Length: 499
Image: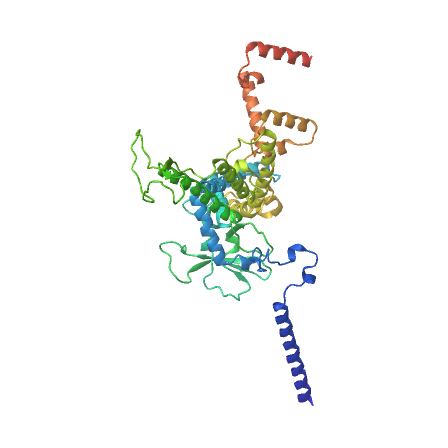
C-alpha cells in the first residue's frame, strides 16, 4: 500500500515539474503583452527602441562588474587619461581639489597639551611618508581605475619613531586566481564573512602586467584590518569599483575623432594648390585632359588653362564655427559625470559672468566636500586608528587606549577655497559673527585652518607687537594707491566715531 502511495506522489511531482517547465518555456517564448507593460511607456519594447535597450540586463552589481569587464574598463580609461589632455587635466584637477596640500588633524579630547603633541607628531609623520601625495594618487586611481587600495605596513626605513607606512597597490593586483565561480563568500580578490564584511584580501606578489609576473597562484593573504579599499558604491552589494569617468569614455573618443577629422580636412585642403573644373557638358568642346593628373605649379607665375577649363581651390568643408561649440558641449557632458562645471574642466571661464561662475563653483564645492568626507571616513580614519596604536606605544599615551571615545575625538581640515570676491566675503563674515549665526571655528574651518592654532598665533603676534611698540594700524600692510592725506582723513573719521 505504501509503495502504491509513493508511486502516486512521485507521478504527481513529475507532472507538476513538467507543467512548470512548460509554463516557464511559454513565458520565455511569449511576446510582451500590453498588460505586462501596463501604462508605462518605458517598459514597452517596440521596433523603434528594441536596439536601444538590447544591452539592458538584470545582472547583479558584482556580476556586471566582473573581473574581465573591470580589466577592459581600466585599460581603456588609463589609455584615455594618458593620451587625452582634457582627461588628464580633469583627473589632476579633481585630485588636487579633493586632497589639496593634504589633510590636517585636530584632536578634540579634553587634554589640550596631549592634543597638540599628537597633532604635531602626526604632521611630522604624514610629511615623512608623503601622505598627501599618496592620497592624490589614490584619488587619481579611483577616477581612472574605479578603486584604490592601500596596505598598512611597517617601514623600518622611515625617519620617524612611528614606522607605520602606506603601500599603494593597483587594482588588478588584488585578485584571486583560484577563485571558484560558485564560491559565494568571495569576490575577485576579496573574501567576505557571513555578515558581508571583508575578512581578507588576496594580493598578487607580482603585477599581472609586470615583466617579472609568473603564471600561477602566487598571492599573499592580507587581513582586512591591514587593507584600505576606497571606491564609490553605486549599487547595493557592489564589492569592486568602476572608473569615475566610465560614462565619459566614449565621449573622449568622439572628441579626439572630431579633432582629428577637422585637422585632416584642413590638411587635405592645404595639400592641393588648385583643381581644374569645367562647366561644359560631357559632350562639350572642352579640351581633353588626363583625370587626376598632377600639375607642378611655380610661385608668382601666370597660368593658362586648357580650353573650357577653370582653376579653383579645395575648401575645407568642416565649418570652423561649429568646432569650438562641439568641443564645449562634449566637455560639458564629460564633466557632468564628475559633478565638475565646464569652466573648471575646460580651464576656461571666458564665457562666464560673476554670478554664473560662482553658482557653478558652489555646486562643485559641495561635491568636493562629500568626497573629502568619504575620504576621511574610509581612508584617513583607518590610518589614524593604526597610527594612534603606534603613537600610544611610542609616546607613552596609554590613557588614549583606555578611553575609546577620546581616542577618536578628532576632525579633519582641508584646504579652503578662495572666494572670488574677498571683500564681500569678509563683510559677510563680519556680519555673521556679529549676529552670532556662525563661530570662529566654522569660519576658520572653511579656510581649512584650525581656529585654536590661529588664535594662538594671533595672540603671539599681538604680544610681539606690544613688545616692539608697534600699533595695530602700523603693522598692517597699507592698500596700494592710498596716501597720507587719505590715512589722516580716515583716522579723523575713526576718532569722531569713537568719541
